[in-house]
Length: 379
Ligand code: NAD
Ligand code: MG
Image (cartoon, rainbow, N blue to C red; front, side, top):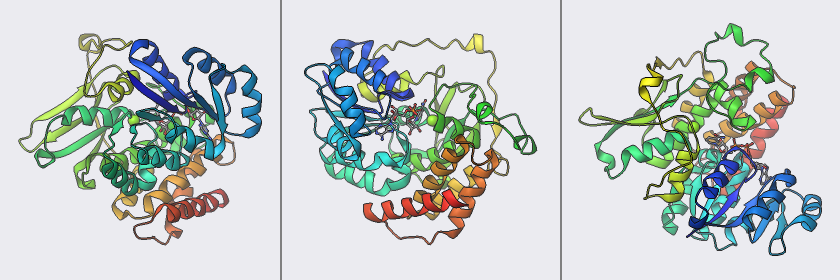
């Protein structure tokens, strides 16, 4: 039986992870569930899955939730509570499904306690990839990708040695505005941006998909997960999201992973690896899909992707700044404070002002992150 703790259990990835758990109740035990402020859903989840502990974002919410939790479930809160729930239960695997670099400390705490990570929270790898990967290696912990592209690459690489890999290609659906020109992006609304054609996801990643910042974050995520140079990582537009990504080997053989867009497949693979089990999803009928399309990635159309590659190549503290500036800019766009095209302008300005910190430690990353957020909130 697999013992799980889920950070961000009420979100898109969190609820789909619990869906997977529900489809094979005997295979899993839920140790901990952490959410932000949706205590109504968290209480429902606690009643159903009987975790030992739940976590919410504030003391007030913890007190509000307490009377409704099952007798055997305790409640913790805040940043400290998140670290406690990530590291302090008997879970063997922690699914990181909260949004943003705020997941970093809890992820590191879980790794430190020797817990395997089912990684959805890509921002932690982007902001501190060198630290997360080094600590995981030192503790003998697996970082199992949940992001669909990275799960695809992970599955395609299965058993292959790195020296046989020529390159990998991450596919990109293009998000809500893939068929619009840059001119047509002026004045787009939050509602339009939140309308993703293929995937139903949290607000932040949906906006990231429209700006292509998401693919940029994924390029950096892939660099760390698979130990590949940025020259070995390609991005291809593929509107149908059927080929989730592929690996080209040195003999020009390509192995791709395909399936209907449903996150429960990569989520479950991260939980059952190295085994495969049936999933509560639909099977792909290629004859029904009939045609798959591909377009070369246009870096002028998607400057956020260009900036992500540049930040990744610069390394050190640059990806931390790219990520934090993006998180702040997206929050400002969602709050109606700036326009869609301002998101890239904010990131570009903050990156241009940043003086790189070499090999940042956790403390420097926190400082750089805070600096970038402050700058991004003002420009
Ligand atoms: P979401 O907004 O739907 O869910 C976020 C979750 O985090 C919620 O449960 C929320 O309550 C919780 N949360 C917020 N603040 C918190 C806090 N202070 N403490 C604890 N929990 C808190 O987001 P999502 O779409 O599920 O994305 C989660 C992560 O997975 C992101 O990093 C995203 O990039 C990644 N991801 C998502 C998808 C997808 O299909 N949704 C695909 C690939 C990767
Ligand atoms: Mg993805």
